[in-house]
Length: 326
Image 1 (cartoon, rainbow, N blue to C red):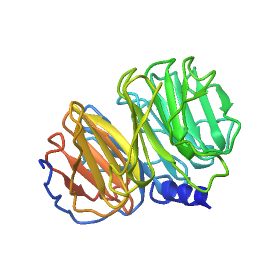
Image 2 (image 1 turned 120 degrees about the horizontal axis):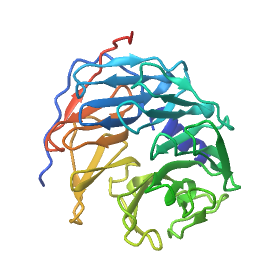
Image 3 (image 1 turned 45 degrees about the horizontal axis):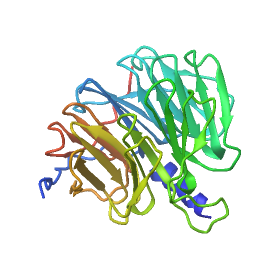
């Protein structure tokens, strides 16, 4: 039952900072699950019913791109302005090489729901999803290898530092590390692991490494894991987001940002131990965040898009207009 609740949460929703966002006229109401920013002006958002939204002007105007699917899209990764990848339910993987003018559906060896995708260049990428599935490619999606942890765990977050070193986080508080590009994986000791049949859960929804030593993972009840030694040891901190589940993270400037349920946005400078809760004026579930140099975008349920153009000092609620792409 807990697994079903966690799955529904992701698929159906997924002192100095006190500026309250100003709401614009609502006009678009899909659930948005992920966002990617390139060069502080190009934005891609993906979500329910195969939704792909693109803005080339920092979110002032939006175009609906045609991905050719009605499957929910859970993760988008922009390598650069032209090369992007998307993963979603039922093994859906989409690729564009022209900035979204044309999206191509890529054949993969799985029909499982896919939750997180990352590419480090146009050729090399990894995707993780349900039932412990991991797939990776070394030739831009022409051929995929399938890996599995041999259990029924849901894998929600992927973070690769380079072509060899990567981490995956997911259900039961589990984090796995690969030193060889995904050929082999070893489970790390987080201190919050729970067995498959446990009545308790410490599900982790996202993982992010900023360098080879420093990493973070977030999950249920506002909890956060962090490491300063490349995952050899992890420290668990309760209720960073209050009791609200934390669903996504991003690095921005000299800080880290985390979003979650009930409009939760928390931030801290990397040099500080103090977390600041930011009032965005929204109680919607916030599923993902992307931060550029100055531009930041948060996305969530019911068409929620929230923007900052000054590194997070002020936030504004946007409602993307439903403009059809040509």
